[in-house]
Amino acid sequence: MTNKNFIPGPNGKFNDFQNTLIAFILANMSGWGLPVAAAAEFLLLSATAGKKKMRWDAIWAIILTKAFTHPQEVELLAARKDYEYGRKDDPTDTSIRLFITRYIRNNPKVSDEQKAEMGLTVPDLVKTLSTHVFVGNNLVGTVSWGEHLVHHNEVVVPGQQSKAKGEGVENIHVFIAFTAASVTDAPALDKFVFDGMVNGGIYKRVFGPEQEAMRAWYFVRMMMKGKDGKYSAPSEIWQSVIM
Image 1: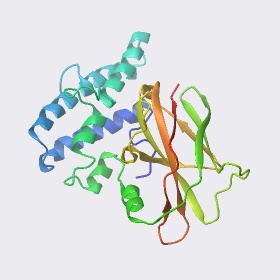
Image 2: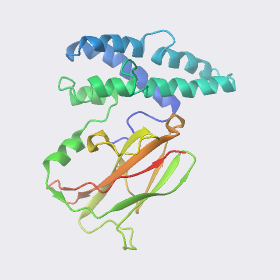
Image 3: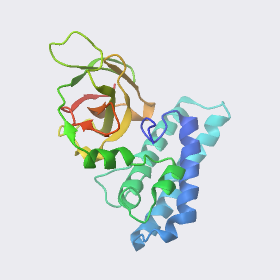
Image 4: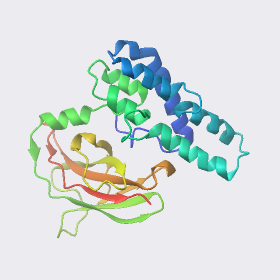
């Protein structure tokens, strides 16, 4: 899949996504060879009063009435952050992202077709990149300026004024990963997902309110023209906090 961040930003679309995801996991997880601990974790994620999904569902029902208070708006943001991200530093906690990382993303018993049905990023690009010959990559990216919940990234060849793609380049693919703002070491490359394509040397990334105060990490690869499927090596990673 080539959608931006596989979990939708707008809350309405996120609500649809999480409902589809949880229902699909419930219907199929028995065939995925998950450890015993996964069942208790899924119960916390999906069906524990006041926690994760049930916390989100309760506040989302209030928001849908359009008669909500500011504290309820704050609770919506907190409930989504807890449900979507959780706490990586707490092994007893879970979230949508943590459950996917622990039990789904690299599970050989979960097919790419099933991942697609759940709305997850299918790692076809990653598989292709790892098996094809790399060409050079002299692109450099920066967040040239930002505004509230938006990064304006510039991707250029240093010293080159033209923003046009280089000769033989079909597209320039952007990959992204997220960490807490306090993290200063770049994630491993396998933690990045395809996020979109550079257009005229610019990549504009719009974030959801639940991503505010996180750190976004980027790199780019060039997809070369022709039928041989060559991709460039990754560029240097760049990053900026989402404000």
